[in-house]
Image 1 (cartoon, rainbow, N blue to C red):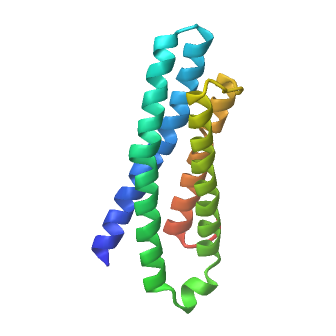
Image 2: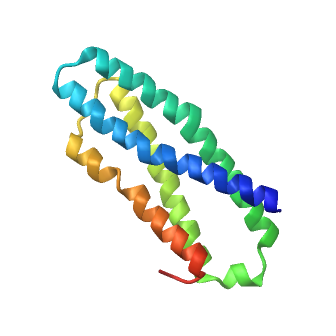
Length: 145
């Protein structure tokens, strides 16, 4: 199970790296659009698509599959009653939703239909940071934050 845990952690790190970077690309994409930089905009469309489809989604799938494997293997009376685990799982569900919202924004940018501002994406970019901090604290301290 230590191998499963190790690969789960690697997949989570990769997923979070992509979750942090994709909204940053949205910020730069907004800047390119505001400057009328069509070549830059087209480049960002490619980068966003490849990051979302090639790195972010596969790493999410691996992280979730391995996390589920660990959870099922260890689902005992302790985990059933552990409030911190239920909070963590709720945060993971929210993070999956955030992931899919990012996918919707990738599609909007690809179709040149983005209506959000650079400032919006700067704030939007902070959501996974909050989830990461909460999950690490929950897992490390084994109690509600």
